[in-house]
Image (cartoon, rainbow, N blue to C red; front, top):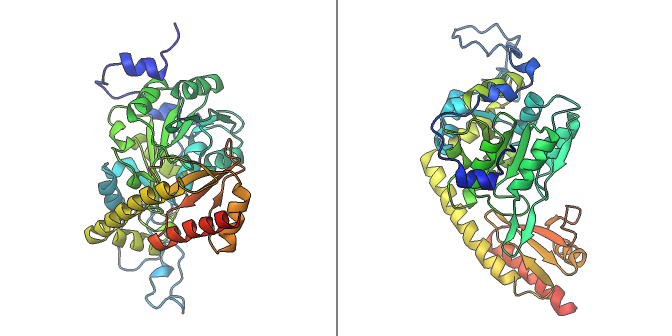
Length: 379
């Protein structure tokens, strides 16, 4: 008897009463007991004279405070606790890394044997899933998003079948999607995770979650140990250059990923900046700016739908709009000539006529509309 599809499971499976299968069983067998590299900061010891890491005895002349001569903590407690509080998880469920890119790479390296163990992606989607997989020699299987009258949706049945057929170890879902802007229904994500329990991780990339309504997929971790969530400070928190992201998962899996991580992944200046950004007053200001961005998203989308030559403006729960144009090349060139750089999506699957426009300030968004009006007038 075949396993139920996610849709069937959603209708028939009662709420989980116990934790699901141990995600350690999905980790590469040769890495389950891998100890990783023990750096000079691995052991939590204290002292007055530090002579254990072969650091320079004197600070660099450009470093007035002298702090940069010391190696940073691999996972600073204050940052880990602050991020866990922000995302509503326990510190032991979270690993901080270099943006979301490093966690994506860590997951593929830890679970997928080179040359085997595929991943499943849902294009059009964030390109780093496939890039990291291909650099690792891991096959990439596609289960494309489906375009509907309400925007792009995920065919969860197709994702499950693709994962089963390929023997995939990881399914990457993006919610809100990049570049689709669409959110995924958590009950369907949970049903997919149940259907693939013991077979694959279901990774939900929530880089744009702050701009969306509804709960995070972290709410699923209590029942489904094969759910993993990615978050970042790069978008809503305006810290793209600091490169601070998080992977949130079962503590057993977090321990494995930390052993696979580079010895000193988090530069101290980035850690200090992130901790300041997570102070209550700064978070309150971030929330206000997110609200302003969401209001601009509605305003710009409505205005773009009235522009001649715009074929479709997709609903978005992120800080960007995906837009189809009758002549995307001319629009892209006109915007660039006006000093406005948007993302050309014409090489992405099914988006040969599309551009992605990040939301800026009101003045910047007005500049986009003015340029399109000028282009329309000249036609």
